[in-house]
Image 1: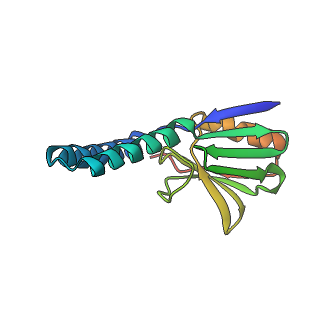
Image 2: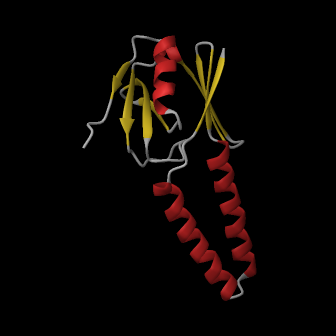
Length: 139
């Protein structure tokens, strides 16, 4: 059975990008630097596309990670050792800083941000009950 989880879009990531990108674009338009403003709008469109198309699909024993039309990754769920709740800001196929670190080895991991985080963790555990789940401490 195929299960699809969309990426959570977090204000902590989207708002700063939107404010900075929007401010620079408005300044470029005001200064009539049209080619650069058009380039900035094109890049903003691409970033928006990434935010809206990032998803995680569980199909059989495989986790498919997709972000836009360029990033596609497959992970064998039986090889996943840990799922760790994280706020790691490294670049990743995640549209929020409320992330899960999917770790195969200490050096081989990917950061994702499913909207239904608990449902995603449970679905992963159903496919591989040996996955260790590390949660953040609640404040």
